[in-house]
View (tube, rainbow, N blue to C red):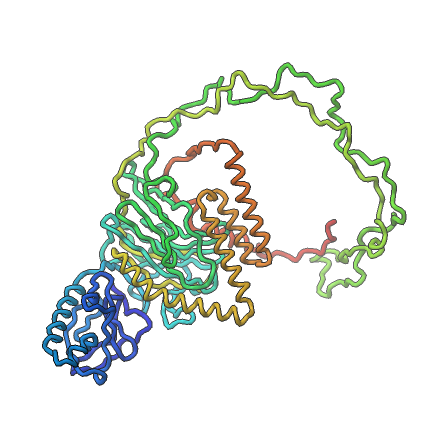
Length: 634
């Protein structure tokens, strides 16, 4: 089992001599030992709730001088990194027994408590990896040496906390780093929890902050060669760029018939929180084909791996597919309506009549300035001193509106306005009638799908490494508390003890800053407003329109004055969809246009490709010369 450095917020490495024993001030997760300032705290575990037997939530170990009776007991190894040899127990809960001179009974209870504790801590909590970055990541995490990955990883404190994480330190860079696990993680064996924290300290306009959980690599593969081609089993985490705004969950699943790895995307995934606070992302993979996605300890998505409603494409292929060799007969008529062959154009139908004609009744307004142009050269404009006629061309003064035209009805040549031609009928077409030869829309016949298979459970590939491979336009992305465990309660405990306190501090700080800026009420209102809109965008029946809605929300976040307009636009989209559902007729059946392919790479996947496109669009050609000043367009 892979361990990590001690948990945060507590001193580490100092010693205190109690009753002749050396007690290291080190600790791990809930259920193990905690240190706070000068006292020990043993809190209730996530699996062995031994303190309930003593009807207490915790037993506090304080300094010797505060209590009468103190005993020393050996403790077991709590985790793979630290072993607390001795700890001092104060039987605070048994004080009443001591005061009644029942030391013998107290000692008996103490020994019983120690034995039970021994059994509890001997149990494995299922934690495979808990990376806190309290210690340097060098040597444990391997930075990719591939040429494209120039981004520099740093171990830095989260802003406002005495808490370290792995930091994306530069803008517009590719980053790749990987950690091999001590032993593979079998996703088929019981529940598996994947969890990590991210903080977008400078926001996220275009980039990813997701993790890749790698499957077994080729024999010659080395961690320093980790890149976007390294095969993974699962990709999980936030991604945002343009219309993409989602917490990805992508499973690469092997088809047992064809041997191909297919990339399956979670449909309608949660949106990425839009603030700069620390957020925790949790994926719970259950043995009964169930997947749960939590964001900040709140369930945002529940899915079934075998449901076509939850994954695209479905893990289980359809039993039949259209026959690629089937051809439409030449005499097959798909036209439901045809022009009436017996219809004749009326004799008075003039196809050449224009749509508009001049209004002969119009009269030029009095005072119209025929000889005055609408625009004139700006008399105050001067030719720039560094203007080079040979390089920049002949300089022309910019145009401004003619001030004489402001008080006159108009300037320039007067022309009669146009009006609709009452004789206009347009091109004549014969009316449509039902086609007597109509056979419907042709479809190829269905044949058995050679790639079809049946499974009781998904064919998960074991996880052998955890990697971060992203291309982002933002810096300041901080990763922390990367966790792989078989115990849901252990993951929940870490959320409670590591993420929740930081999140609450950051929320209060943000609230105080808003109050100081005088925007508390307005900012809070806008945040709630946009949070609601993101939830609206996650509604399944709006899935087809989600990119458009996300674009509108993104514009609103950049320009808060557009808030009302954004709301109206989203409401219009929803109303339009409702009308389509009620009055739009039957929805056409979806036709699969392309077969599954090996190692399919997402057209709806990460933002890396979109980041590259955006970066290329922003580049200017080398040696571009300064353009000549031009006249203003009318």
